[in-house]
Image (cartoon, rainbow, N blue to C red; front, side, top):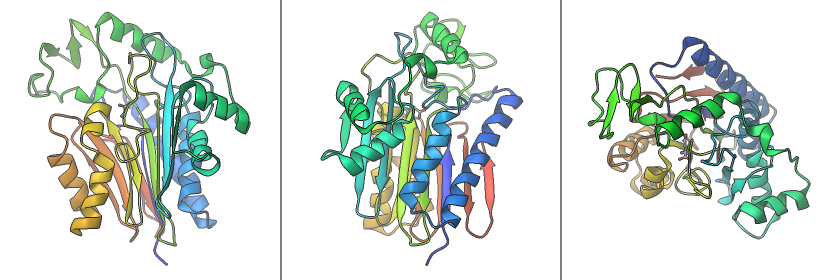
Length: 330
Ligand code: ASP
């Protein structure tokens, strides 16, 4: 028996100017989710059930960019994606392009458990959702006023909102990889402040007391993304991965995470090189992302928890069987 551990994230796109009330709100939601997960683990639920349960909570809360509160496409619609992986048996399920499914992570779970496939997208995924009888709602349910105004600003700035590229005060935009952008009390692009606030994509990783690991990630993707764009979150090995050794969930610039197969690289460093979990996380963040901005959470079968990010912050928290719990942003 190992001590169980759980970690959650609410995205690596943190604006240094995020109002304190919004920071507190995000912390409260993460803490509530950790308590939900910890109660499940105490009751003996397997890791895969706990990650699904916790991500459902986060999808239902509009604070984060998943389910209700998802980032919007250029057309002002929501196209959500999610994935789940059970390291015990290396089973996985993923979905993309969802427009009506209230809890995308649960549809990913059904793809894993009840379909012959690993990944369903767009019309086929929606059809599968109907066949399985999962809860569906109108697309407008997912759209919040706050996100509508962020989309408006992103369009005016002719930008996809790479919130995680917001440089810290004192850091110039070129060294943050943003040629042509100006930083004055936040990020100005084409003269417009594009980063408003950014609790983001959500994820959860768990090791249960049997030492089984699981991971799940869910997102609306990037604000002002092209319709049809698929990011890292539903891609097994990029945004999400779990195996016998560990479980990983990523957040940040999806295109960079995809190029670096970030989640699988962390697991491979543990599996093949025998690195400790934190060493593997640090190495992957430092050496694999090139110019990309991202963060991740991970747990190992021994009950370790590790975080890593090269953004200014990442909404994150963890709890362990010995009663430890923390939630942090910066
Ligand atoms: N990784 C997500 C994506 O590119 C965004 C995020 O993590 O906030 O879709």
